Image 1 (cartoon, rainbow, N blue to C red):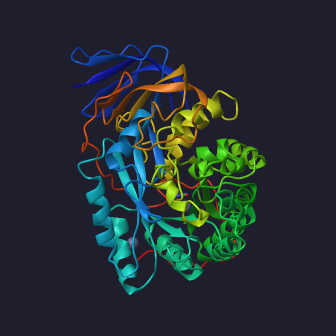
Image 2 (cartoon, rainbow, N blue to C red):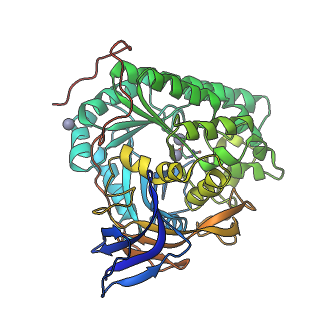
Length: 480
Ligand code: URP
Ligand code: ZN
Ligand code: ZN
Ligand code: ZN
């Protein structure tokens, strides 16, 4: 049935205006004042913002990691995402050396199909480059629509790839139109520092942070950016936590290197002292890269404000405290890395970013939705409110005061890292392709209704940065 959203304030990355929005067949068909359609169901958005649904570029649902599997699957995770105002996620498809990429992708399709309540896509991890991978990659990118490749520079003996693999991935990505994503930490040095800490009897959660200093993240970020320049390719640095990494990204961008950066709510809001909480509670705050000393938070907010960082991912990777985080009792290196955030990403950025004057309302939409849609080939189907786009829409009460708590959240996990945080703003109604997923704060969606979205190759819009002719490396191969 057609739906007509009346009386709301439409906000995009560029505009803010009063208008009605008409939805027909899951698509936005008209935007304007005083729209009428007799048969349409009226949704009154008086006093609310009408935002494009959030695009979360970084989730880990139903993912084996650290000797266990993340607590949220594609049903619980996407349901929580929808409650929080997110209508598209891009999840990380893990791969294993020696296993065909197509098999790993099929595994991820099996995890999502029949479960997702919102639309989704996958990034593809690259563990190695060999003849088989080289033969399969064009198919993954062009036929499967998986146009982003992820390389881990950390997690030695688990996910970590070497620099040769990263470089060759960058070359292949340039050739076929994919965006390379990196987890930028120096895994070899971290491995040494962990062994050194454990040998010295330092086993508590805080040593997770102390064995992964920010300098090491900055070093890996700079290395990845330089390899990108050498390959004349394109790079997206996930979960940036610190000033050193921001500086490397800013420096690369100033040189015209095509580098983008994402941060996450946890790095904007929480700091390293959380890992010192007694009774092993610090384990709840173990992410990689780790939470940093508080002074880094200002650098991250400033970078979002001035465009040196462009997106916000949840890096949702939930593990229960009981039974999962506890795997690391007595050895911090065995604590599963990651935390829950898929539900709170959107509202935290609104409350802490817009309402505290750190970013504008248009920047909020750009960071939480539009920019990720553009970078990852989903735009304009996703990421904005315009005629012809999917009707993925959040009707958002910008005045609702609430407190984040695991007692009321919808993620399938027994704690919330933002427990007790007072925020303002809440999604009231969330539509995915014109269908209600959340209606008046109640879940009314259907598992399995979410569709896999094939994405466009990179870049799918004119780039905003122009590589200078005199920068290192003009070696990127042309597409064949
Ligand atoms: O600690 C984290 N970030 N866990 C998720 C996996 C990753 O590195 O993104
Ligand atoms: Zn190609
Ligand atoms: Zn990572
Ligand atoms: Zn992650």
